[in-house]
Length: 481
Ligand SMILES: Nc1ncnc2c1ncn2[C@@H]1O[C@H](COP(=O)(O)OP(=O)(O)O)[C@@H](O)[C@H]1O
Ligand SMILES: [Mg+2]
Image (tube, rainbow, N blue to C red; front, top):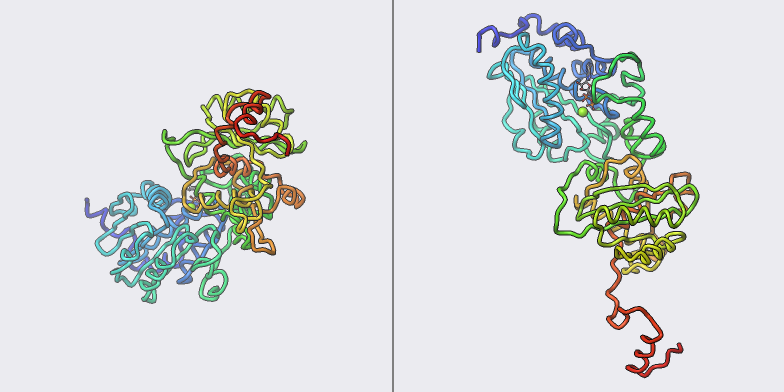
């Protein structure tokens, strides 16, 4: 490495000036144009030691953290930046990808050397990143000028924040937390609530992002990853503006989610992000939620083991057509058992599928008694509770389908006076103006519908007159009840 590369790009006397001007620094030195909200964040870091940003998706917040990292190193003679996020992927592929991007464009100016998660200008002037799975990694940083950046801060666990706090001892030690307001507790949540007075807080809603503020003109292509109008409309259309998904990801608000949510949004999103390789250990099964009313549609979900293999919607159609389409899909995937919702038209579909006799069919009436009727008001409650458990155990992978996600996130429960868990019924959901949760129902049929107890062998043959006669002969009982 040449001497020139190691030399500080900015003279010591000038550093003081640029420390107060992070926005101008980004423009003049790094040739980027921070948007208004990004400017607000950069100025806040320069003026305050604790900054917390809660934001919608795709607002350019990680990019801002990358700008802050480089600005901090270049405006101090000795400085450390520690960057962290809940997962390695978030650190390497998000934050450090942005840092590398800016570095590559301005390498001569910045100097030093960069690797996948480390930028070093000299031995006492460097930035690095790691995921927050261990608290030890925060120990032993003694530098007066320390900047700690926590990306996706809402997902960072409390012991990590304890470790971070113990590093922030000097007068020029700063902490920037940025993230989606997902969790309703913890340091990130508290910064906007009970400890708010200690923080400089910033809020970014979708409507503050450059497409809406027109900082990116309509004819300009937005950088990939920046929030678009179409995306906002999609979430609003499927989820409704009261849904926590909309609140968190579009408005940048902590969800007003009551405690009665069955499956926390975070788990659902994790499941939508998860991929399991199809395994050969399990039979392929299908859940079939048949349309009951004109507006609802029939949804089939095929799963193998913990993974959804396919989700398909059939337009609300008549009996035979629905049966035909369901059987076609079952054959396509070599489905061994179809669990079909028995209520209403579903009963007809069940009968027809059984008549076809190609695939084993199990009718499920979710309104019937649960097997654990002390705990659950009916089978529907028991099944959905089982589904919840799969999400809790990280044992399910679902399609990243906004409609499915919002239906799952909207499921709520109560308790009966006897203390049984009770799910809000489909009718109640529809009456409250939310779309019928057909996809969620198909999912629970595919994953948690009970297998019927094996039939006694005696009844394994079709019930014919001869059969009844032979039964009589063997057991001598009358067929009258
Ligand atoms: N001011 C800017 N100028 C140019 N590109 C930007 C700017 N801010 C963000 N970007 C780009 O927009 C994309 C999304 O930004 P990112 O910081 O990842 O958003 P968020 O963290 O809010 O989801 C990235 O590719 C990033 O490089
Ligand atoms: Mg980000």
